[in-house]
Image (tube, rainbow, N blue to C red; front, top):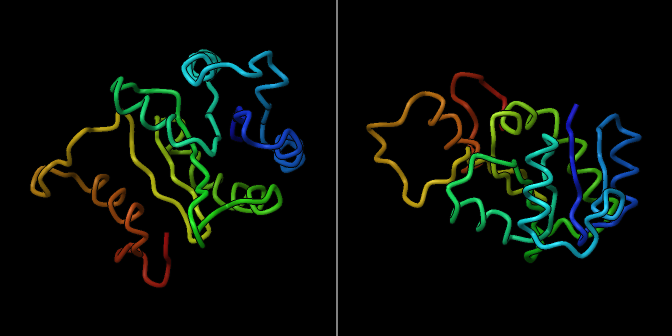
Amino acid sequence: MSRLVLDENLSPQLAGTLRDAGHDAVHVNDVGLRMSKDTAIMEWAKDKGRTVVTQDSDFADHLRRDQSSGPSVIHLSQRGDRAVGTTDLQAEKLRSALPGLDHFLTRGASVDLDRSGFRVDPLPLSREREPAATRSRADDVLQRVRERRPDPAVPGRER
């Protein structure tokens, strides 16, 4: 079960829809964080063991700048034809993605979610990419997830 806090730029109704689907979801308005700075929301989420769900790309920027190991963040894309713009579409995409993301979120991750799928970057976010020769099997799996390529070890199954 995912433990989520939804940023102010998302509808409080989305938190209720996610709760109905079995997730522990709260909206920043429900926990006294209305109109709070991103850093305050991130600090609260980290203290409470929650993943921040937002449309704001600044959260990943904070993680990268601070080389932070948490909290995990799910960024819902708002760009072009990949946008996850409506509350119904956000709920649909989150409900379908969260079971596959829980493992990454509990370890610390920045996730970009759009209409076509998701990209996972483990925390802390690096400022530069490692050379391919130094990556492990787990890093290769994460790279396939980022590039939305199927795992050759699992025929017919895409991530």
